[in-house]
Image (cartoon, rainbow, N blue to C red; front, side, top):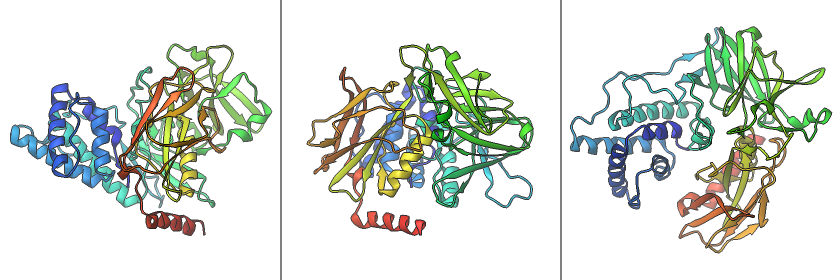
Length: 462
């Protein structure tokens, strides 16, 4: 199981001062050394690096992470008796369900940008918060048996920290974990939430935001752009986010929807962003009430199919929030990796993940976000000192819709015992846009384990 709550762990470490962060790093290093890990490099403490190190060492197991945090806390208490957990009573997320509904209840938690009262940027309170958060998300994951996107170690890349150029979306939205209803083919998923009353909510699985006036049940799923584009497709417009099919009961209870997009709008003319609305009579373009760094806000929606598009009327081309996905093909010879470059669009991430699971493949725990936003049609090559084979030699960053097969590079090496370091480099200017260090423990799975995963997939399909 992957580690829950990466975004919340990272957020709390970012809130610390540098001195307290160095203290956390020192005690974490002591604990991990006793557990057989390598020493943490003697470089300035970095919140993201420490978060990833902790999750990687614990193999994403929330109980293991919790145990390490408890050991760190105990060592801090020996140094300073006042460094204890905050005595405030645990804040528990509320649960709600529509009356008479027998299905799973939606879970409501804080958005990740709020810091509850009494939990400021101190090391003791940070550890206290992380322990409580892990206790909740760990028990919830065990109860459901399914990993949500918020519980994924890559969750921070789907949250508000998507781009160094764009400001964060600061709002009081509650993050909501929807009920997931699978279709007959096990691929198409429908999401359903029962909202208890007026408020602002955001789906943890899709990044879809909802502002509601009263209690409402909302059901939504990803649509297929290629089924609707043929009647109006033109070089003047570019798809800029997932397409949603949305229904609400009662419809009038929804005041606004926040549609996710993957555009980097720093310095861009936001009037070129529109919302495509597909109805039986055809397609219309609607002007959003507000354009935010990662969402377009549309008020009083009439519901059906909605998605964000961008007007390609002039140059330079718009920048794209982008991620790199790296998978290890379990049944291929030696170590074979599949590398994808896609827009930061969860519908495409999900499509790639669904495809790779059928191979079967395993997502390698690396940083997803590229160093900077990219532009479509740019080309990238892999650079490494190691003896690797890369096919094809270069990969073009394309706007390929989620319903289509995404292009990828295959990276092959015979020996990974010493680890494999490589980077993704722009073909023209040779600038690195992403790096990875794959360690043997990241890409080691026995043939029997791979066969077990294959057998499980076979059973689920039959």
